[in-house]
Image (cartoon, rainbow, N blue to C red; front, top):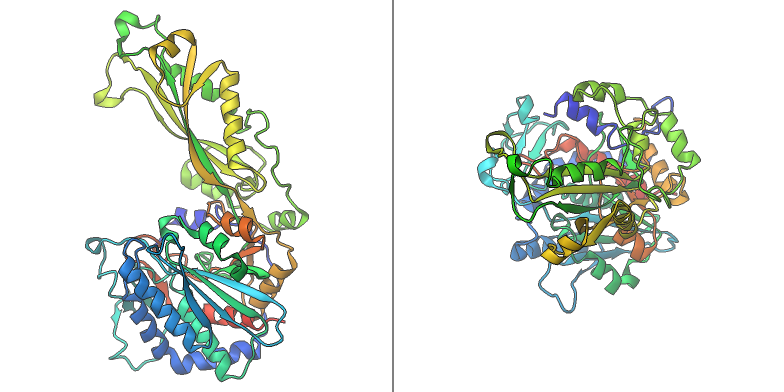
Length: 516
């Protein structure tokens, strides 16, 4: 069970809310009704099939089992009429394949590309209530007293609050049963798709997607379409539907400044030798005011402006900032007057860590040889990771530091008053599809038809994902459509999916696949 502070953070730290209807009531369409009729008739079959899939271990480094997962998906989607194939790189045949497929619709002029990843996080069985690869159904959340349920022994109707516990039950295998059985339900009900569907199922997302860009570039012609739909992530903790339009970018660097070439006795040399910890503190204080204003020249340049649609979203946002401050014990926050959610639209500079000498019982009366700061940079739309690091580096040089990439030798130390070693990290830019993008709004409209609840739109997540590969290579808008429950223990022991969230996935996928 998530704590109160986690609940609060999951809402405002990750989202901007846009209410699409003041009534919150929508008429269910015949499409959703037909899909629900099918689902009720086949609930046990759907769940048993999903349990079979979850029993296949899916850690990206376990190539034999990853291939079992891939072959399972090929078989199941071919049963639904899709043309499927496994895509690998010619020079790297032994990496997890992308499972690619096409389901063409006669006369359709729109192509939707559906992304799901079938790999999962590693799992240590010792930390789980049950073996992570032996999925188990519970009558509710374990934390709230749920008990095991046996499908083979139960004759009762499936309760949507039942949960399946197992690795990747939510992240990110949950969309697969919803997609497959939505296609079955539509076919049984003689309801035609209105879009061509393409499927891009990745097998190494949890390993950092090291080959996804190469796959996109090598098979670019296959992936042409009008909109990428990423079926990944949790719903809002209130259970309300949500659509996400972007993610922040991220990069970072480490800065090391130097004092004496060996530790010095602070009694003999204190007040005479430069102290690297103090030097670093003074340097960092020139980068950012206490108020949060960043003083590095050009740091906010090229940041995409907030649009009218974004501003309308901010204006409808319930303000949780005060509650969050109270829970975090914060008397004040940076950039007073700017809400937490609005801050996601701007680049940030964070001191992730500091190191110099020792503290506590290990503290010694010495002047350390160096001090290190790890700087994290979150990127807004329009910020280039390399240029942002260039600006930080230029600022350090402007403070009188001689920049090096390796440990300085004695000659460098003697010839320069101040020396800083900069180790630049990797990173990737932000991605954001405009909220008012016409194709994205069609998806929002379809989801609206499938649910009786108000829809939440997120202009951008506070966190970061490497979606830029898809945007940069394919030049196609991206929308994230989550279905998992917010308390799914993603990446953690006892990961789970609430069964009602799979049913929700079927409802919205049906409307998306058949939208006008």
